[in-house]
Length: 131
Image 1 (cartoon, helix red, strand yellow):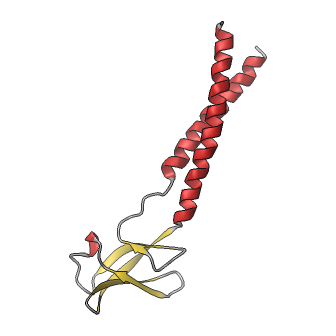
Image 2 (cartoon, one colour):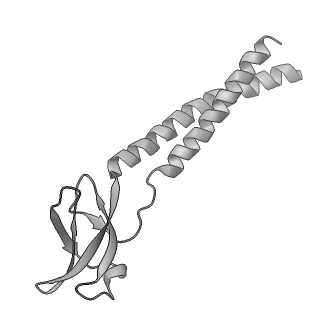
Image 3 (cartoon, helix red, strand yellow):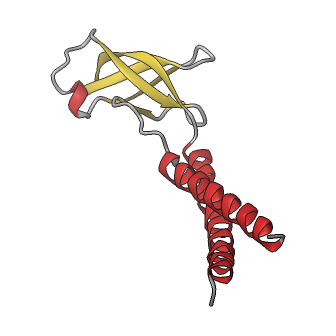
C-alpha cells in the first residue's frame, strides 16, 4: 500500500468517525443543557420560618419563592443576611446557593472538536481524490 492510499484510508475513517461521533456528542450536550434549563442569578435572604430557616427570593416576575436553607453556604448565616443564589428559569421554586456548572459544555466542546476533525479529514479525502 502506498502513501497516497494509506492517507486516503485514514482520512476516510477519521471523517466518518469524527462526523458521526461529533454530531452525537454535540447533540447530547445540547440535550443536557436543555433539560437542566437556565439558572438565573439573584440575591436571597435567610428567614426564620417555623422550626428552621429558609431562603426567600424574587423571580423575574416578582413572585416570592422559598426553599429550606440546608446547604453548606447557608449553615452559618443568621436570619436577615443575604445569600447569592441561582434559581431555575423553568421551575423558579428550585434554587442552588453554589454557582451552577455549565451543563453539557464538555460534551458540546468535544463534539465540536470531533466535528472539526471530521470535516478536515473529509476535505483532505476530497482533495486526495484529485491528486
